Length: 460
Image (cartoon, rainbow, N blue to C red):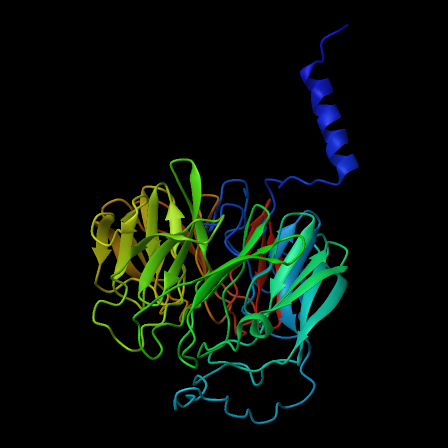
């Protein structure tokens, strides 16, 4: 009997994968909000454009039904997006929500660049990666309104190449196959009670193996506890649900962050940030393994957290409401507030909304005014900044790709900066000037960027 050669073995494994329908993540996929590594970086997207404009380096553009903070997610030849339908007419005045403790709902944000929330249908869209043509759309929820800066479609979908999971700002989770066939739905308010977050649900789901992990950090409009829970990704059945205690008051328990994953001694832990604390959880049971305080040192009543935690090279970075910005060494158990604290940033430059990014040695922070600060990721020592990028107010998170930082503003203007210890602005690029909250996706030599009106594929 002849031994099986490596090329023959490769062909056999490929055939088995095809026969079983199992798909492995390709290096060029962007399967979730923070990309293939979950940290806003990619090492495979090369030959990316540095400059573009309305008439330059645009492969295609497609009109979107409505604006959304949800980012594009790419798998194979498909792009997936969360979106409201097209707005039918001017929305009716919004009734005040039911109060649980005599609190009043504040007005929506001032200076909002869009006239309405979009239509009342909440959709999962599937587009062709090659042309931007819409392949299918599925309505999975209804009920849309403006909540401060966003609407009820802000969370970004996630995929494993076989299924796509999406959640609305109303707390409806849906699972579809890649052809748009619905697999299951899960209604968070029906299962666990009314959502009590001031500006609606904005966290994206985390896919970890066969588990879909979600958080509900709330308190402005409810006295019910916050919690973290896991669903079986295939069936939608609850695997576990644990309360996440906080001593935060008023708006402070609310968080719009997205959970992430850290690996400690070969074991994965779920990282959740908000309500004054950073916590680590066992993915099998949800049990809290460790907890770090300090995100709200003065016990303020308005310290909601929007910028998500970042994990990179054994470090966990935890933004708060501007300051403090905390950095912890991964590991430990119980109260790690002091024992694992690596450094603290308490001056201008740290973000409120954009989630930071790191290349390993350096951490890059973009504040809401569009200024970039670079620090040593292990010590917090300043390297440069803050440098005003000249793009204006920014909610999108920076992405590190092809040796460059890409930062997109709320007016769809993108600054391209050389990654490294010296600040160098390579270019500033404009598109359509519309209200842009979404973080771009980077695949192969292309950037998929969503503005308030269109989805663009940018490439040389």
